[in-house]
Structures are given as C-alpha cells and as structure tokens.
Length: 252
Image (cartoon, rainbow, N blue to C red; front, side):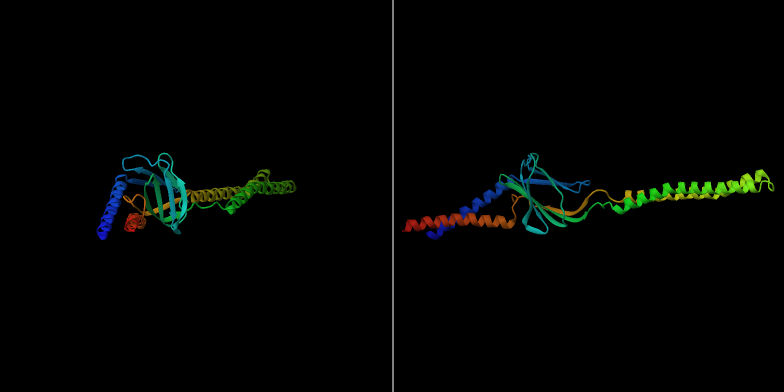
C-alpha cells in the first residue's frame, strides 16, 4: 500500500513538471542579434513569441575564458535591447530572463579585428618632411643670389672683352638646372604624400568581429538541460520527502 502511494506521488510530481515545461514552452522567448559593423558590438533584441518585448530583462553574459562565471550582468532596456563588445575569441553565452521566462543564445566569435593605432613616428616624419620642404626654396634662393653676385663681378671685369648680351645670358643658363631640380623635388614630395595618404586610407578604421555560428536554447526557459534536470529532481524529491514524512507521522 505504501509503495503504491509513493508511486502515485511520483507520477503526480512528474506530471506536474511536464505541465510546467509546457507552460514555459508556450511562453517562448526569441533572441535576435546583429553585428554592428561600425563599433564591432553585438546588438540583441529579446522578444516573447507573441512579439512582446522582454522589457528590463536580466542579461547575463558568459565569456569563453570562464563559462561558469558571469562575465557581465546587466539589464536590457524597455524594448528588450542590449549591446556589448566581445573581447575574446570563442563561444559567448548570452542569457535573457524576466519573470521566469527567458532563453540563452550561444555565439561563436571567430575573429576580432582592432583598428590600427596611430604611431607617433609617422607624425614626426611628416613634420620633418614639411620642415625640409620649406627650407629647400630658401637655400636655393641663397645659392642663386651668391651666384648672381659672382656673375656680376665677372661681368664688370670682362666688360671690355665680351659682348654685353652674351654676358647677361650666363646666369640664366646656370639657374635653369637648379629650377628644374627644385621642381622635381616638389613633385617627388607630392607623390610621396599621396602614396602615404592612400596607404592610410586602405587600413580599417573601425572595430570588426567575425561570427561563425550561433545557436539558441529555445523551449528551455533560458535554462540549460542540466539545470532543468536538477530542478526537476529537486521538486520530485520535495514531494516524495513530504509524503514520506506525513506517512511516518501517521504510522506513529
């Protein structure tokens, strides 16, 4: 008789747990997410299966380095939205729960690309280039003035032996190579600056992550299978233990 009662209690407890599971499934939760290409963040939106938002839902995030300890605990906004930037490669577990309902989504981060840091050496090199470029015309002007002075002295000394027209053409011929050289230097500097700007433009300027796959634990109320089994066993043992207690009291 006692065995039969225990069996009935166990059967009722098991049926009760199945009913709870059915209710949890009927109030399912859907978690959608997207990758923000500008900030490299994962943006989530948690909704009930009827379209209602999980307003102010409790958000628990587990990182790949320590899946057993929460990496971050926070709350979603009134629209069931939440965003964060993962900093590790591997599987991230993100749980949304509110009023006993929720779900877990597992996201596998394959790669994380950080934007390149600006180097101070590049700025120093650019400053030196500007200084050298600005100093070059001044140096060329000084050299040209000195040569013109020498040519003028030679012209005065040789005025009796040479024609004035041929003497006046010599500074122009001497200056021509220097003008060409200055023009070529400016062209090289402009081409170098253009090449550096093109190389900098090709480098990524925003944080980017690569997601290989993601899975959801829909229908479990946001709990893992082991957690559901443990809670079920605890409830069943509570019913059985209570029945045994009253049975022993009645026998006494």
